[in-house]
Length: 310
Image 1 (cartoon, helix red, strand yellow):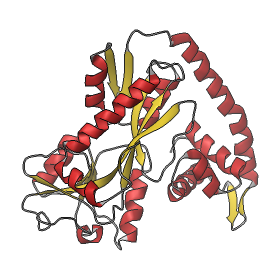
Image 2 (image 1 turned 120 degrees about the horizontal axis):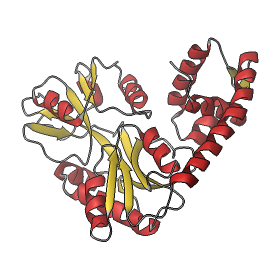
Image 3 (image 1 turned 135 degrees about the vertical axis):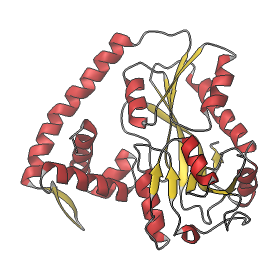
Image 4 (image 1 turned 90 degrees about the vertical axis):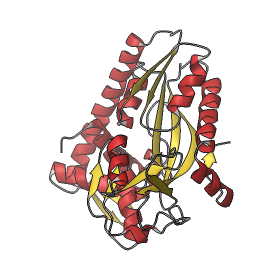
């Protein structure tokens, strides 16, 4: 694993906060996910960076060296980004939207394009989109995070659009296809298909499976179309957002207790145009996507705390 600036941010955050749990809250990550990332960083650097006990986290000698370098490199990188943003960011007559895969982009573009020109950029990497907004190449970024995570660190201004549970997609001939909902543990022997991402969803899925008493078998990480195909032919169960629209040959199954959830976020550059109006349009686009999903719409009647943010 090559060391990246985001790894240095994690190390600095743990040092500044004095504990992994406090650092996770500051970085907007689930604590187990941050712990797993910290272990990978320590393996890459060749040794432990912190001594951790019930009193918190204290840097080792190696940790002090890395932290000292991080305190020089991170401000320098931030200054470079700010200079690049000032260089390339000019007033725009339209909206520049970046997005990962999700239900909001189409509806948002439709709404914005009735008032002003819109350009889009898509990527599976939320970090890439965030960086493009920070550098002034995009005005807004539509991304998703695990429901229990906070907002990403950095200079962007973030708003929650909505929170949705993750459901399972199975073929019509799957044994559970006729159920109203299914326990995650009932799918313990399945293979899985998921779309890629650089957040903590994979770690959160693994932890949800562990709480359900199993370790997931094969996980196919691939594009939406392939996930759909694998579910249709019975090769895998696909995890999907609850706003997923009906697909021929597939049944969407709620997972009992909503062990996994997905939070839709809109991040913006401080100088992004018409921010309150764009946020309102994004929330309306999410509301419409909920209405178009009969299974989710029915599920919301029985479950509170999900759906479009107020």
